[in-house]
Image 1 (cartoon, rainbow, N blue to C red):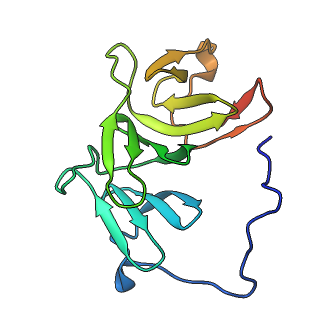
Image 2 (cartoon, rainbow, N blue to C red):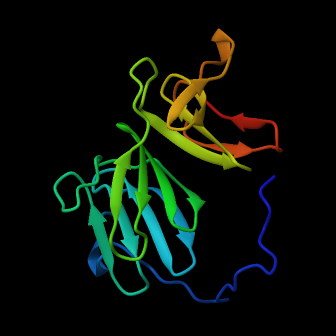
Length: 172
């Protein structure tokens, strides 16, 4: 089970801030959110990946410079303080340069496994991916499908959760 940091990050009680296209958010079609210290990464259905630095939003997609390779981001995970992965219909995109000089690189490149990532999950040092066809462990950018019986094929998966250090659970 994921551990809550100790001490837990402070939460402003009674304070809510709304972000939408009326006040600068590039898209209202949100599929994933990852909040880190001083930054929020948001995956959208239509505008690619969006970053919030505490004062303004910026979106990256195939039409921007630098170009983010996808318009849809279904999942975002933190690999380390300087590296994030985004799950997209085009595969796993590595994000570096957090803090302003963003770089985007597709890291899942094999052709024999579907690259349409529905969600990513980091469990310890392992990264797991669910595509529209398989559940796979990601090792050095290569998706290694795990054995799943035919009646449990992960078609239509939208989320997952770490169960413990060795297992995980997914839903159809």
